[in-house]
Image: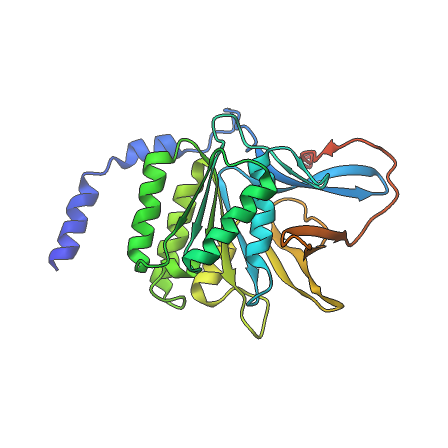
Length: 289
């Protein structure tokens, strides 16, 4: 009863008129399209285009079965974004000048494996600047969340891209609806001025992320990308765009090269190019009323 009264007292001090005025959607005011920070080159009969993968102001989810090379895929994406240019002529990373800082948060691996993952990303990107990594494995779920909140409190204005490898480790239970709501709400709030990409396991019997937590983050994500071992060649993993608010990119394969680095092995659908230049994805016109 006391808790209910406290909530009512707090709500009485909230200026809801101010909130409504600030959050009103006014189409007379132009809203700029969020910057694309990672895109992928595709070739079609009409030419060469760059399909968006990540944009600022959103979060994304990478799902896959155990040992499907989810972390390797994140390493590939992160290296392209840190490098900030065409990566192997396929991926293109492009952070705004005031948002160059990239953060990697590992909640699963031990110190040695984390060290090797970060060392690999640095070598792939070719630079160490504007890249900070943390290992939070030893902490409890709520403390991990508090540490992440603190990172954004002190560095939030500079962060353009953040990877959380092991989002399930921020919750006390993946099938707890309250915990799923708490984590999804945190991601929506922290990603308002950057992009956060999370990793979560897939169920063994279907292609959905595990538990209520997986379902919640998939629904709120800008894009959901799955990565799983390729049936025809187990040395490769197939990367698919499962859900996307923008146009889907075509599936592609990744493999681990002789140096232990992930690379794109093959684009699954290719056509002779009619143009030899990049054509940035265009906004579709609104249909007439």
